Length: 89
Image (cartoon, rainbow, N blue to C red; front, side):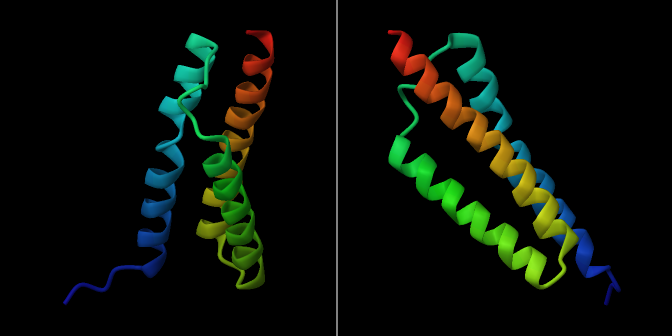
């Protein structure tokens, strides 16, 4: 049927899954609260994303590397804010 470049789906998925964390980061910054974010889930997710980065590197997949690196940065920021905001109150 259609001869779509397979990387299109990788980049499309990368954009959507990466941008999904922006609302949480923005909310955390605005409210200066992250009580509703589970620390264990966040740590597990960051560990999984780091594993995806390693996997993406090993198979030389730019979409996997880009998406998961950005996602990891966003989630580490959420983790840092969660910890720092919880100590203030």
